[in-house]
Amino acid sequence: MTAVSVSKDAAPTSEDLVVLSKVNKHFGALHVLQDIELTIGRGEVVVVIGPSGSGKSTLCRTINRLETIDDGAITIDGLPLPQEGKELARLRADVGMVFQSFNLFAHKTVLENVMLGQVKVRKVEKGAAEEKARQLLDRVGVGSQADKYPAQLSGGQQQRVAIARALAMDPKVMLFDEPTSALDPEMINEVLEVMQQLAQEGMTMVVVTHEMGFARSAANRVVFMADGRIVEEATPDKFFSAPRSDRAKDFLSKILQH
Ligand SMILES: Nc1ncnc2c1ncn2[C@@H]1O[C@H](COP(=O)(O)OP(=O)(O)OP(=O)(O)O)[C@@H](O)[C@H]1O
Ligand SMILES: [Mg+2]
Image (cartoon, rainbow, N blue to C red; front, side):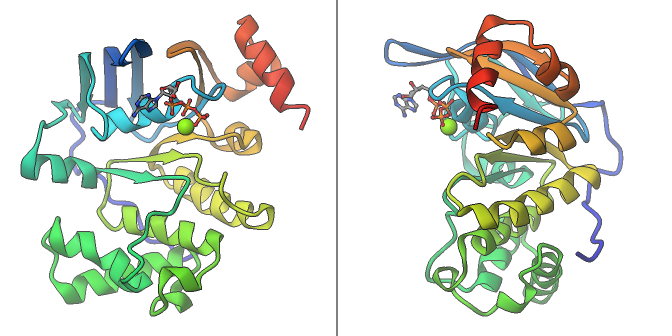
């Protein structure tokens, strides 16, 4: 991978980049996020783990306002999440998101996929957008696929394009929701390596994953969720060697058997 630096704001106002305070959310009767308090520092890599249905995806989706919250507050870089319109589009660009399914535009080439948001949202001139897209595609190891359509790529390649597309917006933070769980085993590492590299370069990242190897090697902090609550948070070393809560112990005993 070539070294393209991840751009950050020149004058950070605070070490806290993403702050959730007293966040609550219901889906009907289900209290899916309960009094969530979470602060993510600039350059920090937070891995979120927990049983299915514990609210991990919902938590991620609130951070770029794909889901609204009932009460509490979320700020990014000191500013509350915008409600709608252009400001919301800007927020979505500032908060890059990579999902389990790759969500690329099927009728656009790989290169066009990585150019589109730059031109439409960031108002970058086409030539510059193309140059940046090619650099990013090289960086994630799919530069030679630029003129193909997503369906012509493997799952691992598509997911790396999705990462490049998010990075093209110069996001302040990247959210990853189980980015490798739809991939065949042999493609998981090529995606994790790109994420590992990003982490090393100082990108602020929130990563929902079952890849405990990634959590151990890349995370500054592990956040364990159960039933809509953050039950435990600790460094990976502490969390994996000495989980405190019964829920975490039980969860780890199940996943570490695999
Ligand atoms: N749009 C929705 N409407 C109603 N209920 C929802 C909606 N989205 C999620 N839920 C419910 O909220 C709970 C939390 O879901 P969420 O997807 O955040 O869990 P998760 O921790 O990401 O689980 P998984 O590990 O299976 O991805 C689940 O019980 C789910 O069924
Ligand atoms: Mg989920």
